[in-house]
Amino acid sequence: MIDLSHQTALITGASRGIGAAAAHHLAACGANVVLCARDQQGLDREVARIKDNGGNALGVSCDVTSYEALSGTVKRCVDTFGSLDILVNNAGIIEPIARLADSSPGRWSQVIDVNVKGVYYATHAVLPTMLAQGRGSIVNISSGAATHALEGWSHYCASKAAVLSLTQCTHAEYGDAGVRVLGLSPGTVATDMQVAIKASGINPVSELDPSVHRSPESVAKAIAWLCTAESDHWRGQDFSLRSEEGIRIAGQV
Image (tube, rainbow, N blue to C red):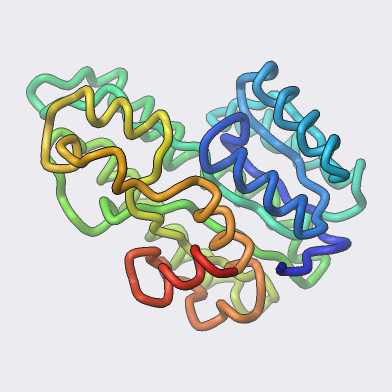
């Protein structure tokens, strides 16, 4: 197993799905983990499970659309564990799925607030600490939707394209200062998001059989690998779990 001992990771959207799986796996790799989400009950549940397995974990209720909340979470993370070495920008939403003419401007904007501003806010909040340390890894959860248009997903596709651009820009600006920034395109994953996608009945992804979806745990393994020097080739880019190397990493690391 990858050794992340003496490192501290902050994971957004960590009360369920990929975020919770990442928190469990990074803790198993030896990292201190700070779980961030709006669902305090869910956070408490996951933190208790991690601690029962011998890990160090802290749950902080936080809305990623609030810069003040994220900045406070970063401070609490550093105050508690002494450093912040890994940021996993996982928080993301896709509902409501709708064609443009049927979409709600308010709800469309909410997706941008969470999926794009949340990534920017968290990244902005952790950069001073990582730059002062001279090290840090930021993993942005991306999607094939960043580069492929899908009917009914204008908000999600636009947001993930923006996240890919943020990955590239952050790497260009701070890659030489020790801050590693990588994107992860996990493919379809067995989470609540896929339940909503299937219920929408819009575009081919909604027609996929649930058996083809990847497990959150396999994605968590890839996240841990992206936090190591072995993945340096992919800095400033999206690493896809659909590739031969991605499948190997997700299944074997």
